Length: 303
Image (tube, rainbow, N blue to C red; front, side, top):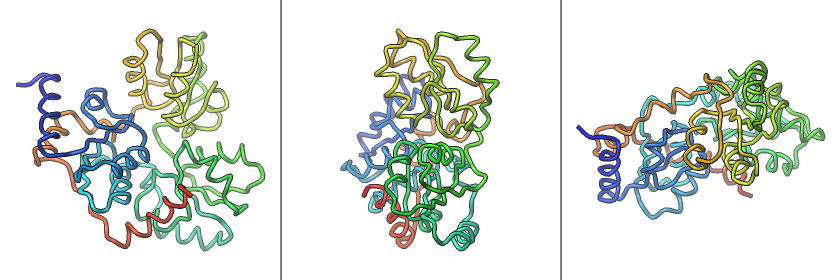
């Protein structure tokens, strides 16, 4: 029997022996973050993996994140920590459905939120993260935008770019969409001194009530720079825990107890250990054609 600290020591030993780079999305539990080489958002992690010298990457996150890492590092072995860790938002739209939407709106630039499958990325003009979306869409020469799949993030951008016309599907993150204005009211009443920070994947009526709306990395940066000492966090509740570790002198509260991504929670510290032992996880395999075509919209974002 191993306790948490002993298991973490075994993981650190194994990753060094096997020359594995461990990536952990910020929504993973803190015990996993402590053994990771890089912690961050999905695209940031993939960039770190691409610049790292190690030839094997273990992605502690969900499938589209591992696919993105493979697209940016096709020569590397990329392992997803739990085969069942998907993303409901990434799976809401099929390639055939997107092809029909493109035919219906041929004048549009097709903008894919990074929370999409590799297959969908092959059909899009540009990929965006929640942190880069506003700047990228603003710089596009096209005046009409087909934004997939998150209509909440899309409408948040739309409000700030009235000069462009947007088209959406009825998609989004079911976890963030579960947060309601009533949750905001209750949290404000319970913690009137706290600033409300939310992710733009929340519904527009929730982001409209926030003191700040931005990506996960944006929320973390806001707390770091803020002189306030109390915050209500409107994104996955793991961020509350991480902030409590980072800023023990400040107070953090979950906006909704329901804001928990079940797919992110599938990966355990034991899974990380077993992946390194070669008895768990799933290697991500993408065709050369998929990698080449999906890379186009990611490169467009960088430009």
